Image (cartoon, rainbow over all chains, first blue to last red; front, side):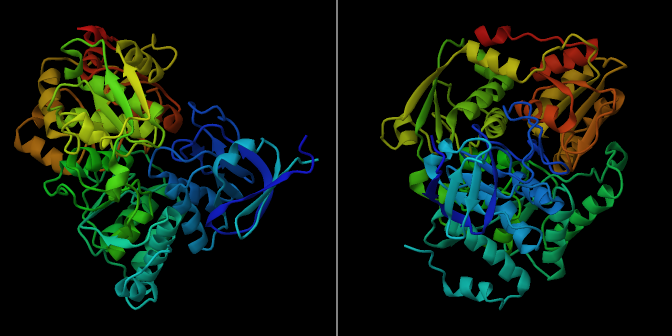
Length: 143
Length: 422
């Protein structure tokens, strides 16, 4: 049992503070062609999480995938208020970082991006996750 | 080791070249820090994907840079947009998106980018030479630049592309560095006959498999004949960069950094060796095809990435010898520069006579082009087949260009993958 939760020292690609419920994607997701910015809905029919929403969640996945346009689609979602609260990654991903950076530069939203390495696999869907400015991540059950 | 900036980088960051350059440098630096780079390096060119309209944020970013009088420092080409400026009626994009898409295009032009509007900048006359560092966005262009040209670009996203063009700098990281360009996963072709790999579709399907299997490693393909044509490598790369994150593929005996298997791997043993046979490519074709293809075929789309002049050389005689079914719309996407060459060849008459819809400056799966009744669409592009169902809510069928033309004539899907075995 992990009722007490656990902590991981992540490396922030874009430092910031966030807290919310984890949405864990076991397979990488391309935002372009994969997420609808107006709703935050995962629309990629090839992806096992199709039909889930990234909006208001702490998105956890191994790494990004696919098209260069994913930066824009993430930024559009953050601008429309349908983006994730933060993104935790197994490996660094420059394309997602760009989307979050531009959303911050334009003053639209803050979406920290933190690389936590292999422990991303230990986060479970529905876990409560807190991200601190130094990149440390606290994970615990919601109740 | 942290990131070391040179004097000029620091001037740009401090705003001495204006606020747009300072913003661009902030973004380049954040990318460099994320990648663990120790320095920035000069680029000789850029290709911008960020000119495609997705919504108000991409537009705001472009207009903010343009309003602050940003100018690109290196020759810069532009990727597809959401509009076809030569055939405006072909795109059904509604207001206000239509006007906003046009404004976004204008903002990038005002920064000194060339209005090329193509996802295949490698088909333009000036392309980067072997070993040149560039910043290219658009996944199929990235993999082509690294694989076929031996130019060096990392897998860049929108926004970074224009920031690199404005500053002329990118992080010394990723595929700009020798050590990251070595292959690590070997795909061994086995069980194919002599002729199979002469089909472009062979390479598109192989790309789909390679992308889905490779992860973040660099794939090495062994067992292909030497001198694989550019269009086949284009299909390979586009397929691999759609089903996966592949940005460089070594094709032993063809691509410039892979004269031998040993060169491609840098003398190291591969992490994995994967055998690919005809059954794997049949599975790939099935993955790129919807569940039910028995209904009426209403549209065909070829030219993703944009059809090359060599592609038109193949397609034109096929169309000249075929009568397209009256219920089928046949789309061909290409760049405006290639279209000009097609016109100079005198081939356009064939397209007019056959009622073909030529689409330039954009593509049929990124902006509303298809009609509402066109819900079952055939394509020879692994990339189109991969993305169109999610983007457009339609069903796709993957087939060779020849099968696309035969099916367009029949008004129903006709496919033959027998060539995989001969």
